[in-house]
Length: 145
Image (cartoon, one colour):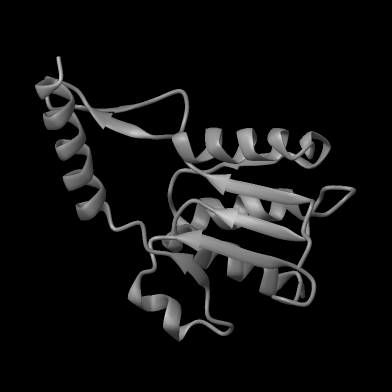
């Protein structure tokens, strides 16, 4: 499709500290990856990030802000499928057609996506497999030291 003006809507990462409390980080790996990719492809001038609170309501508000941009993005990458529901609603309310006017892609590939019109393009991150691979990497790396 040749998108160049691609926006990102996401939230900040959260970690559980040693006391068991959830702490919001100042950064997010998905957002960092988006920014790095845009810079690597010399698309800095189109780099737009909107931080929401991982909810559909806040993603709706972030999308409304995005729609106010002078040079409106032609694609949106959303950090999670539940947030994408808010993105879809904001675009629909503004009479912005998916996919003719803007493309939307997300992460998680939750079941509800199949009930959206148009179906949401979403990536299944398979976190269980990622966790196993991380443990294998750490285990085998320790054996080599």
